[in-house]
Amino acid sequence: MKLFEHTVMENEAGRMVQSFLTGLQLRKRARREILSGGGLTRNGLPVFLTSRVEVGDHIELHARESTFWMAPEPGEIRVLFEDEHLLVIDKAAGQLVHPSPGERTGSVMGNVVDHLRCEPTAHPRLVHRLDRETSGTLLLSKHRVAHDALVRTLRAGEIKRIYQALSHGQLPPSFTIDAAIEEVQNALQRIVGSAGKRAVTHGVSLSVSKDRTLSLLTLKLETGRTHQIRAHLAYLGHPILGDILYGREDDRTRFNLTRHALHASELCFRHPIDSRKICVSAPFPDELQAILSNHLQ
Image 1 (spheres, rainbow, N blue to C red):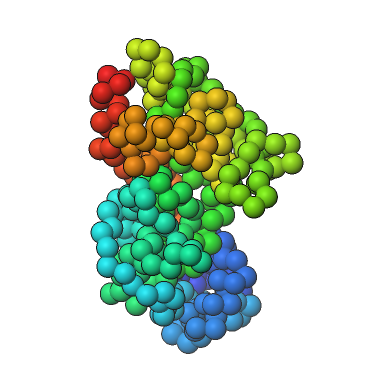
Image 2: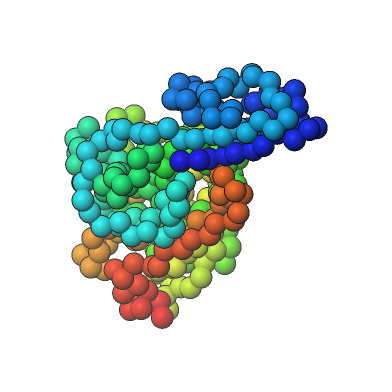
């Protein structure tokens, strides 16, 4: 797969090859992979990053062919956006994004590997993660160059991630939670605590039930800590509906739920190769829409 090409102009003669690739923001590991696989060429021949160019030289960067690193597993993939560099899917609730030590099969990644079997250069990597029970938009790269660029963008806070949630109680029309989150030793749960890492969540209350016991929220992540939204809302005393780890155990029976009511509804970012703006959205799941219809509308 061709990632970049350029023909050297007269005013560019004498420059090093690497100067033409600065926009791709390649990390050291990505550079090593590309060079070891002969993916960087000048006039069709492998070249070093520090090689000097002449007028008319044609530079190309290719993603090398990949061997799939896990077994493909047939399964439904709801594609929201896809090209030769990226894949954005609408993840179903209840599915792990990646195999775990105790659960080696049935993951989103296994389904993605199966989906990409016909693309010889594809090596899918997660750009971010979603909890098992969280549904919605999930971004993956198909090669390391795209992954490096997207991870840098994510760390710089330039990927817009919007969530929707059903929570207990009534919150202000708009609010910000700026509270550090820390791990709990030998537990899955996270808590708000001064020893943790800074975490910021911005929220808007879209509607509230007549008895003010349930709210529909839109939430935007400024940081991306594990369980951030779930821990932050529990800290405020407004846990997410159906969240057994942070909320009320009887929610699932009362509201006929099989998961917690958190959904990654929207994702916006700049394409790592051509810089165009990509925005995708995933519809509110039927299971959560039923609660919305019965209690908040």
